[in-house]
Image 1: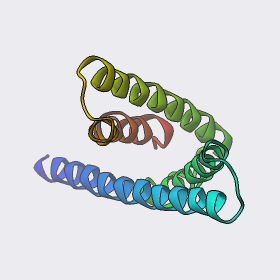
Image 2: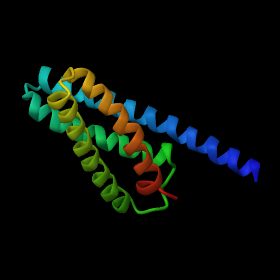
Image 3: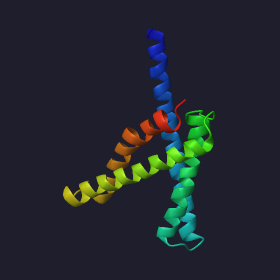
Amino acid sequence: MKRKRKTKIRDFFLSFGKAQLSAFLGGLFDFAVYSVGIQVLGFTAYISNIISGSLGAVVNFTINRYWTFDSTSTPVGQQLGKFVVVVIGSIFLKSGGIFLLVDHLLMNPYYSKIIIEILVSLGFNFLMQKYWVFKK
């Protein structure tokens, strides 16, 4: 029984680390596309952000499906639909958290974004992806 528990704990932290790396890679890709959109293609920041955020999410989804959670037995469309729901939920949580910290607690908007990004990524995104989107 102890061995099974140790394996579950190890697997949890391994998938957690992989998920953080996947999010980091998706974020790097997002930032690179955002920069190219503005600097090279002449897009506005708003349009560049929409394109880069969408492509970054595709990168994150793909890495999570095939590597982080190794969850390819469920149809991709079913997982993608759930992933979109999580992304939308994440956006609402982040927006609400930043609004609370900046507009009501008068915190610095940059520090607020960092705090909320970490809280939502660790407390919502990872858990929803592990136990709902890519559940085996």
